[in-house]
Length: 484
Image 1 (tube, rainbow, N blue to C red):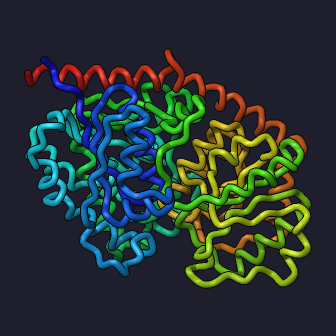
Image 2: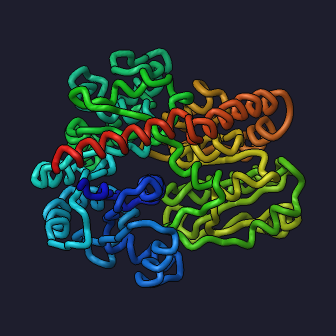
């Protein structure tokens, strides 16, 4: 008798990585997998606090959903007072040492748990390669980024050998310098598209070395899953560049969308959400509101936030602004004097909210975003045009593709070269007007509507992502049978 499939899913403890990994876990649980979801103790505590639950209440909710699902939290080796996301380099370095702790908890005998079929690892958790090898199970890499970015990152050491890395300041300014040597059907890459941690100015920092180190282990896999959909990124040929020694590499996203289309909420978020904004949105005209959010980690100077606030005020449109308390480079934030009073009749500022629910609201007409991949996919899937304002990592590539490849958004000129370039209130105002009214908006809305339809079809029964995920399940079943 073949035992149930059992996927150990190891999540990277950052919001942009954690959410899609949880979505993938739920999709596999719905397909009959027993799931062991591994994260760090620090993240697990945040999850329970944000959900206002204890571990027992979480287990009951999982059982009510009919899932075979257990959480395992392991220490990340950092002191309690460490800021984690405030120093990604130190956090990332600590994560590379999780292998022994992970292997220890996975080798504890528990007769109620079926044998491990595979380890599904975030693409930035090199520690799982040795664990999978020692346990004799396939290592499945899950890219929470788009295919083009993942292809660049997987080949970072190859680009280093060719002299494209570290990315030089003069190359960043050259839009004519294109990289066309990468495998897979992806558009030509500009130096600004390469992950920002590999720019010359970071060469002496730990995050530069860690990015190249992780790239080596992104070439050790038995299967590759990508949170994108074929219709967005060049069909099946785009994913070819992510294969490792001929292993399958398939697009299975957007992984949040099946839950959304079936009216289900994902089980957990790392942040407490403000739900009051939805009554305010209900009172706004259709397509009239600009949603402004820069994710969980992006920082802006106080001067830049003042320019942004004045631009929002001048544009005249209603806006919902997610304004984290730590966004002003970790300092307390004072908005321009009188700003809140002058905009109180058409503005709402919250600390955090359910972004997907916001983007799906009929009053939302545009999205000013940091261009994280989750935010980009969510906006496309909800048919919302974007203004990109990237901060670090893969956000520069996502922003460029939104504007130049998919033609579903705009950006602020020059921020891809200098992420600290001051964007004036006048530019903020004029760009918002372009995305919220006139011929430019009409064209962007037409393009994003087509991609929205394609995304929905991809995750529905018979769609490319739906079929690809089912194929992965079938392949894991073959592995389980071969062991009997």
